[in-house]
Length: 588
Ligand code: HEM
Image (cartoon, rainbow, N blue to C red; front, side):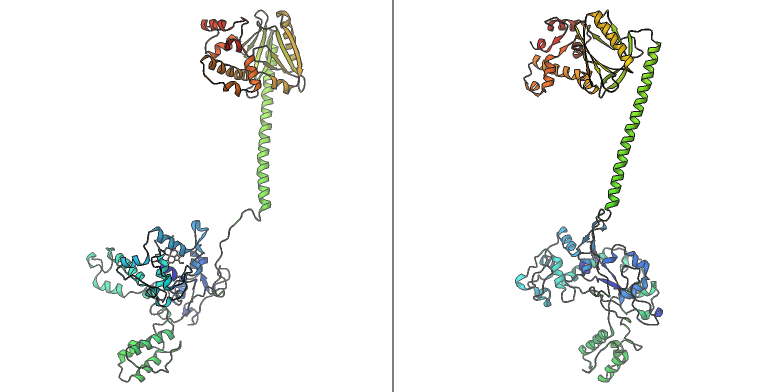
C-alpha cells in the first residue's frame, strides 16, 4: 500500500477561482512573508513541521483547484527527495529516508520475498525482469544493481523495490493490484455499515444509487465555492485538451471509425472540430455515437481540466524552494560571552553564598561564645568557691567546645570536671598514680588555650576567656601540684600545635579500640597477625604504650568500675600493681 509514496510530488500548486481572476486560469505565486515566498508551489518537504500553516495562510479552495490541475508523480522507482532524506524523524528534530523506513518496516513485519508473495495471492511467479516490467531492461535498480536477468533476484526480501520495479511501465503492478483489491474487499466485507450491505437496513435502493453516483467532484462542488466549470470531469485525472482529444481519436479509430491522418489534436482543439471530423469521415455515423466520442455541448471538451498546469518540477527554483537541510544547533557557538558570564555569575553567586554562610556562622559562633563567656563571668561573679574555675573545654575538631567547671580536689588528689548545674562530676581525673602533670600553654593568638595532660588519661584542653582567668587557673594547678607532691612540667607552643597534639577523648577511644581488638584476638586465639601490620607506626606505638585505667577497663566490659568482677579481673591482670593495665600485661 505504501506504493503511494512514489506518487508524492515535491510541491502543490494553488489556483484562483476563475470568477476571481476575470475567468482566467491564474496560478498563485506565494506571498512574500511565507516560507515559499516568490515560488509557484508550496514545497512538500518544508511543510511537514507545521502543515496547518499554508492552509491557514491560504484558501483551501485554491489548494483543491491547484491539486486537480496538477499531475502527480509517476508510479515508478523514483521517489521525490522530499520523502528521502527530508522526512520528519524522531521527536520531530531528526530526518529519515521514508524508503529506508518502508523497507525496514517490511522486514520488521516479516514480509516474504516477491515470488512467495505472488504465490500467496495466487499469481504466477516471475522468472525474469521482463515478467515484471517489459521496459526495465538494463535500467538501474534503486539499489544500484542492473535490471538484467543475470541479476534477477526476486527472492530479495526488499519486496518494495521489486514491486516498484514492476510498475515501471507506468501501470500498477499485478501483485500490488491484487493486494489492494484484496485489502479493499476485506475493508468492505468487514464493515457492517457498508452502504451496499442490504442486510444492515441502513439505506434504501435509491440512496444506494445516489451514493454510487456521488463522486469526488460532487463532494468538492458541495463543500467549496468552486463552480462546475472550474473542475475537470474527474478530478482524480489530469487531462489537457490535446491528450483528451488524442484519446477520443484513438478510441474512434480502434473501434473502426475513420479520422483523417491530417487531423491533429492540439490544446485548442474543440468539441465541434472532433464532431465535424467524425461526421465528415464517417457519413453513416449516428448522432448518439458522435456524442459518445465528442461528449460536448459547448465549444470545450467538457471532461478536460479547464486549467491544466502539469507537474511540479522539484528542481526548478522558480517553482519550489529547496528543501531545508537538517541543521544542528550548538547552543554555545555565538553565545560564548553570555555563557561565560552566566557561569561566572552563577559561580560567583555560589561563592558569595558560601562566604555569606561562613560569615553568618562566624558571627553566630562569636555571639554564642560571647554569651557563654558572659555566663561564665556571671557564674564566677556569683561563686564564692575560689577553687572552682569556669572555663570552656575544647573536646576536638568535630566535637567543639562546652562549658565546664574544674575543681582541684587536693584531698582526693584528683581533678573534678562538672557540667554547669550538676553536682556530681562528669569526669574525675585521678592523679594518684602519677607523679607528673603537664601544663602546655598556647602562646600565639589570644594565648588562651591550656592543655593539661596526666599520663594514661585523655587530655583536658581548656580555653579561657582571658589571661586573667588562665593565670588564676595555672596558679590553682601550681598549688594543687605542690600540695599533692606532683611535679608540674610546663611548655609553650602555638595554638595549632597544641590542638594537633591533644589526645582528645575520641583519639584515646580510637587507641583503646585498637588495643582491645588486638588483645581479644590474642585472647581468643584468632589467627590474624594482619592487624598489627595494618597499624601506622604512630598507632602501633600508642597501642603498645597504652595503659588502661580501671574505668576504661570496666567501660570495655560494659560494667561498672565498682563491680567485683571488674576489680578482681583488673587486679589479676595488673601484675605490677600500678593501678593500670598495660598492653604487655594483657599480652602475657
Ligand atoms: C507527504 C507525503 C507522505 C509522507 C510524508 C508519508 C509518510 C509516512 C510515514 C512517516 C509513514 C510511517 C513509516 C513507518 O514508520 O513505518 C507512512 C506510512 C504509510 N504511508 Fe505514507 N506518507 C506520505 C504519503 C502517502 C501516500 C500518498 C500514501 C498512499 C496513497 C501513503 C501510504 C502509506 C501507508 C499505507 C502507510 C502504512 C500505514 C500503516 O502501516 O499503518 N503515504 N507514511
